[in-house]
Length: 293
Image 1 (cartoon, one colour):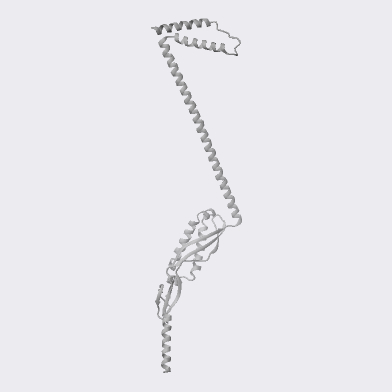
Image 2: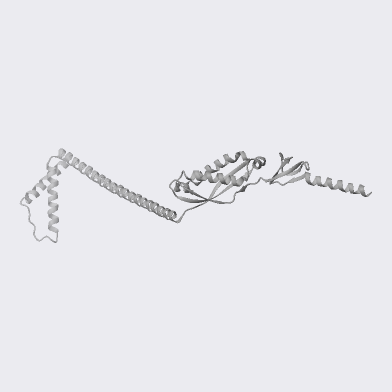
């Protein structure tokens, strides 16, 4: 009785041990690699899985979520011989655990070496200004190189990131001076543009004023021309006497204004005033005779 009980207990323990070793529960963020007698056999997906106890074993438990390599500092030299320090990191994840575990040892270390090599090569082809202005172009280039190198490892590299660019104090001072010089240059260009606009507006105003003066002179000339044409027509129609009448009338008006002036102490009359008055009277008679006709 005791032997049978002992065998039953041993058999039950063996069954429980097989169940414990054979049932594998995989989390959503994991994948398990299974080896059978030392050879890769299969990959266990998230959920409940069964393996053959003592014949198969879980060799690797792999995280398939995105992760990043700890930040590392990389000293590099640009094309214009400026030494800078880059703080970098790499974002990546495993998409094929079998390739990642059996084709590369210490994947993070391998990717770090690849990233450093790619960055040094890319930075050595650009100067400091281009490095600071076109950082995205450099990042894309390095990311592409790492992706191509790690593709056989079953790894997907999301991006290579340059977190910070550190310069020495001398280089920072030189950059400050350059920025100040560029600002001063832009300010001078703005002042020059403003002066140019001011000169152009003054020239436009002067031209407008001269155009207005020319229009006024043209209008006066046209009016004078019309007046002369009218006088010519009147003289042609009525004879020269009407012209003499107008001239002598103006002389009499001028003499009257001169005599009425308070500042006039003496008046010198022309010798032909009487003749002028007689001529005016005669012309008035002639004109009156024409009107009566």
